[in-house]
Amino acid sequence: MKLMKKLGALLLALTMAVALAACSDTGSNPSQPGGGEGEPSKSVESAEPNQGGEPAAFTTIEEGKLLMCTNAAFPPYEMTDDSGNVIGIDPEIAQAIADKLGLELVIDDIDFDAALISVQENRHDVILAGLTYREDRDLVMDFTDSYATGYQVIIVNEGDDRIAGTNDDLELIDKDGNKLEDIQIGVQRGTTGETFCQGAHGVDHVTSLDNGSVAVQALINGQVDCVVIDKGPAEEYVKNNPGLTILEAEYVIEDYCAAVDEGNTALLNAINGALNELIADGTVQKIMDRYISAG
Image (cartoon, helix red, strand yellow):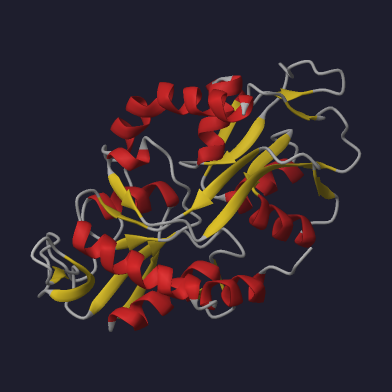
């Protein structure tokens, strides 16, 4: 497919820059939960065998716990309730995984880009945050199998017909098919939407914000002309903010996964094994159905 070839080329062109950025200090300082310098806990047997045929042992940062990081501003995948608890699709999937592994789930809500780094620095065992697979991210993290499909979409103000959709180069276009040059796009910092938009329109035409909620507020305030974000959160933001609408065309299709630090194969296999059992027995679909209505 022409779109996917161009998408692959775009991501490969950005691979080294983004991978280096992911390994640098972003200035965020998420709290390190009880794990000191990331010392592993005692071993636990994984369902995946090692080369000797015996179950491979995995470790977690804190004994008996699975430390998960997320950014709870991405409904319905992760958000907070009135009491400040992190809820949503990803926390429920993570809880089901932890239950299968006999671990207590601990969730920390931090900035998205800080969450990516936190797993790499062994401050957290795993990230579930509406995270999509990307080749540059795969250089520094190991990904599970996909458990959901995400669609990037474009939010605009109702009545604003300047944007008609995108072309095969991921550029936003008008109704005549011309690339929109005089446009400001709001995105969440550290996301694939940010990468796509910067690659198609340049950094000067992209406003990177802390989370989707802030990006949508910037659209309402007239600070940006549109917001590019995943379809699930977009639908929640539009539902709760009259005067906004989603363009019919889907921007980019991606796979949602969990991820652990690069090379943490035993933990990856344990989480992935539990995840696939939850997919096979219908648990994941039941969780998705509770938050996303069909049609």
